Amino acid sequence: MINQDNTSESVKTIQKKLLGKRLTYHEISALMDEIGHRRLGDVLTTYFVAASFKEGFSHEELYLFTKAMVETGNRLRFKGIVADKHSTGGVSGTRTTLIVVPIIAAAGFKIPKISSRAITTPAGTADVMETIANVNFKIEDIEDIVNKTGGCISWNGKLGIAPADDVIIRVEEPLSFESFDKIIVSIMAKKIAASTTHLMLDIPVGKTMKIRHEADAQKILKKFQQLGGKFGMKVEGIITKTHEPAGNGVGPALEIADVLKVLEQTEDRPLALEKRALELAGGLLSLCYKDARSDKDGKKEALALLQSGAALSKFKEIVKAQGGSSALSSKTFKINAKKYLINSTRSGTIKEINNFNLNSIAKMLGAPKDKFAGVYLYKKIGDKVQLNEPLLAFYSNSPYLIEEAEHSLKSFPIHKFSEPL
Image (cartoon, rainbow, N blue to C red):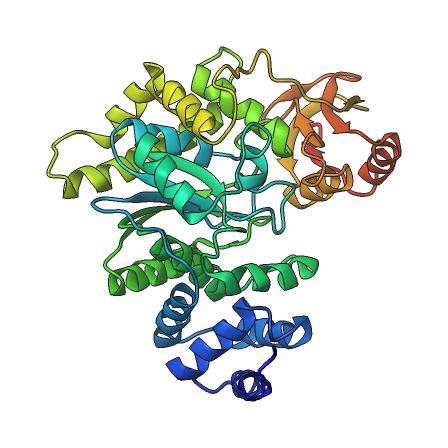
């Protein structure tokens, strides 16, 4: 039953935020409770999201909103060092999480990865993992899986962790944007609720990323670290200028295929994806080893765990614990969709990848709802291309969507060529 008094108070809180005034913890907590339990409605929630985007949060409000999101939801309970990695996002086809998690778990640290589904991209981590295993679990199931294997990769949707955030994400999705402060609160609330003690942030920066300027990235990282400190969490971040996906596939199934190739160390694995995952895993391990009073080198250990096959074995163990098959491999994994090659209409060198257009085309093909839909890039920045050589491939279970994507590609090209001298 809807409590009209609570809803009226929440409306007053939203009005106050719209006017740019500071909110108290009581106001914030009551608002998060109303949103999290779906009592406020989409229209009023959208007003709150818009107000937060315009005005942002003070340092105190960041702390209070994060605290309220955590306390109005469920929590995972783990002891000792609990690691996690998160990307601020904006680039598709860079699924480092599914490589980092088994490396950290193979090193002996707990890493419960609780992920959202796609917001502005053709695939989220949960969407990608779902192509090979179950991602829908209860709190007690997650705790059992992590205590057994060291890690998990699951969806937040049924856990009730920071429930207000999932509602806010849903109302943001049609606009395809999140405010920087909202990103910080969203990420930190879920990490705190998962008992995270050590967090590594992947912060891609570029003109088609969520964060476009390095100065903004530095400010955001500092806010993460300040907020983490208030909750006893150690936070580090890697800011990377990003111009294209690190992997070749964009879309859930295409991205898991890239992940498997890296874990299996195949000759045709996407090396840029491997490099980025190792950098993140190595940094996170170093952060954990320091508090574990170990003199191990995080980067060396991450590389050794990947090259030895220990990370692959751990990944298969996690997949099996989540209801998937431990016999999976990149050679046997099938992309169950129609494939349509796009050949180059000219020769030259690739100068730029338009990530906005890449995301749009992949979603147009049906991703992430169609797990096998997406785009595969044969050519990336710096690659030379001959006339009629395969440039990319469309995957979809709908011939109509493939035709629509091919037509749209003319107006929204993914590749930009260098002009001839």
